[in-house]
Image (cartoon, rainbow, N blue to C red; front, side, top):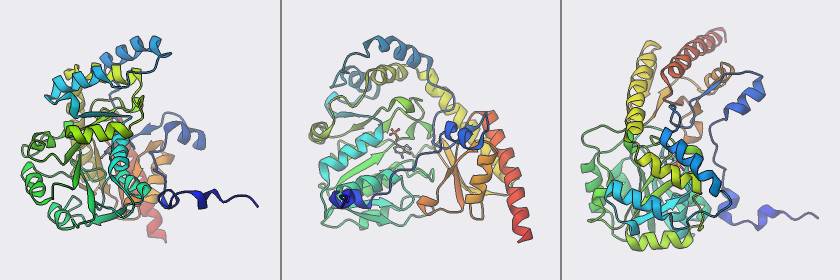
Length: 375
Ligand code: PMP
């Protein structure tokens, strides 16, 4: 009889549901036989990569026969100079997903508890489950983190807490003051991971990066990415900033060559391209306004977002609307897997992409509400 390999797997792997990425444009076009579709589904940067990053990638290609620098010396130096952080506090990852995974591998055992919020980034659940630890999911408040309830959920078994500021998929955020009050309540032997994947987009005066709190709270790990405002999602570069002992542990479980040469070079280049970042942020701000105006005209409500995406309330099952948008060649992100079956998350695109999405949405809503009337 054939072996049931599922039985051989760890309980963590057995129970996992794989990450569902946004649908690739090529897949949609293959399936529907259409062309010129747009993807507003993965919170990518719509303006293309920085010219400086492209030049650095091209220049690095002749080194493709070499292994990358396993220590990522040059990028760590650049990050250190750019943000005033020490080199021995940085762990580089193959995207920040990799860093989140390293944290789980370094710190979690079956029986440990991991706290995160309802409606928070799905990778926290994947990291928790794959290690065999138990998730403690704290109900959200107004779609965002209820930091008071999260602090109150800490038990002797709590090993890790994941926070996202801003949060994906809701785009909510919390203030520096709220974060300080939270950290003051969390025991020093509980690792708090603050995921700042979307920080560059936030303009709220009360918003602060967690980097400034790490002297007071060495148990605070900040994670960041080059995939969003810095426009390098394909290359997979992210990093954690943490206490040197935590950093040492993360580097022990890290694969030595986890960030490739073009990625290392492009990341250094884009850090020096402040105009690119400013354009990303400006384009995003205008795009958020454009989408909000469009939703208002369509009579839809949305969750106010400080990220590069907005989650809109369809006021009915969002699945047929998602499917209708696909027919129109517009890919957005269903969030039913986040227990938000009536919402769709849309990434801010170029102005013309936002306009195309809004007019497709208007047509699809009309069609689906027409169907509902005839039922
Ligand atoms: N954190 C959050 C909150 C995210 O939304 C994402 C990307 N969707 C990531 C981390 C991971 O991004 P990457 O691995 O590309 O750095």
